[in-house]
Length: 225
Image 1: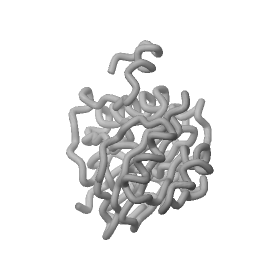
Image 2 (image 1 turned 135 degrees about the vertical axis):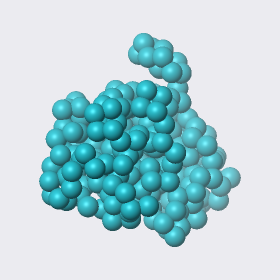
Image 3 (image 1 turned 60 degrees about the vertical axis):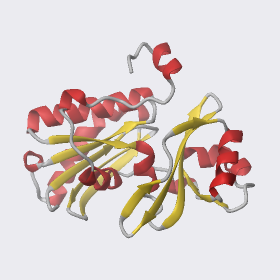
């Protein structure tokens, strides 16, 4: 597939956007500004298009991380992707946040993508990455640190990547076979979202919705799943 694909992520404290044609990253941009994601996403994409010498009007699809992640960030990313699909006439593709994070480890039999979900919980899933593919080994799930340590032991260890690695790494690294990557690998990249989005099926713009793993907090924020 040699079409033009945009990738968006703003599910955490950072944001990232990228433009991909096939397996080539034409331009990528991002930063740390959790309270300004909505204001920064589209200008960053416009700047990427200018650097790459392409038009956003030529986008075939826009891929966006749909969860798990921060509730505000998820909704901002989805609103941006929906708007782009409606205005530009492109297709929209939801991408699992943990899968996009697992792409930061390009060749490993076990990558454990783990996000700090706060309230003493971790959103995590296990993947295998090889030959430019990311293969899911487990479903996304909310764990306590103790539960994830037990799961890591049953999986035979793995490479731990994500915001939970920084917070719970001292505990989880005690599990035999676990290697904890430093925080520099914890940012989800727009290029990874775009790569995953090339392989996923598009959905109707109005059917694009966040994926929540914690219904109680969704209700607390007044959001319907």
